[in-house]
Length: 137
Image 1 (cartoon, rainbow, N blue to C red):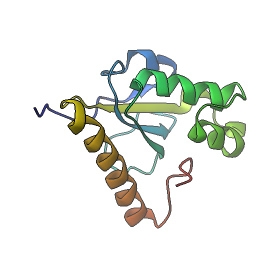
Image 2 (image 1 turned 30 degrees about the vertical axis):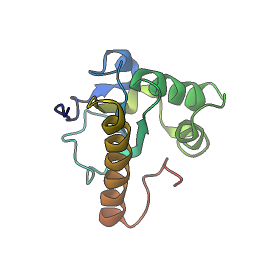
Image 3 (image 1 turned 180 degrees about the vertical axis):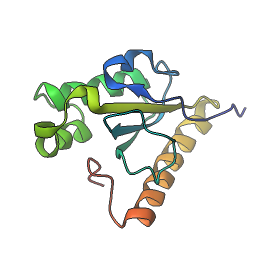
Image 4 (image 1 turned 120 degrees about the vertical axis):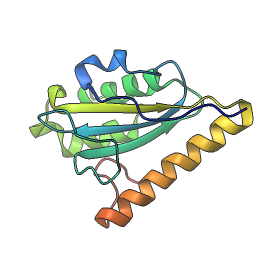
């Protein structure tokens, strides 16, 4: 019933198609940094977005973020927010992604993903007093 969950190593945005677990649903961090972020904790100041997907793969959501962020097309609210607030001084080489694929069985997977994303956003808010810059809710 329950599988192991954990965040993958950081992958530069330009190599996002190689992120571990990209064919599963889960939770993901997007960070902005000139070099690879040091850890996967929410108190990592380079994190700009915390996202989740339950009905699509992580790879699909990352592609949608990229399309919205860099190609001015709808599909990902975090990507749209990035485009309007950060794209003027951030190119793709400064973005990093770490994913937490989740596969626990039908009802457990979606429930855990929703819980984990909200918990991580809560921890971020408790640390910084605001949402991650590209999360609007």
